Length: 85
View 1 (cartoon, rainbow, N blue to C red):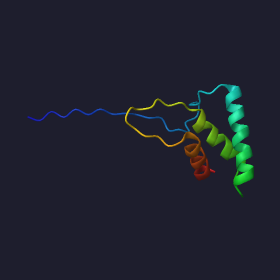
View 2: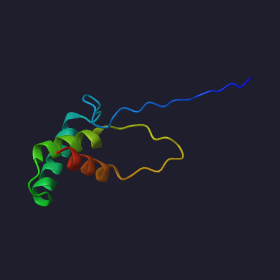
View 3: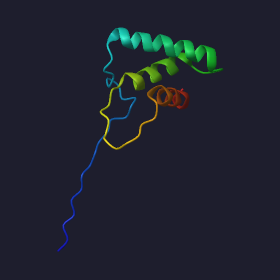
């Protein structure tokens, strides 16, 4: 007889609505910074969408799992926003 045990991890998508944990002032600062970045570096991009999506990713503070290596949060946020918008 073989017994199999499985351990599952469930992670919320980084852009889930309501997932942000940053304060309102922090969220506004992130939005302004990403809007400025988009306007200066992204030609033809919907900058409001870009700033909102990047802000959601950067504001979400997910717990780190020991032993994993994570990409820079700003790079991840801008990459995700670039794909989505």
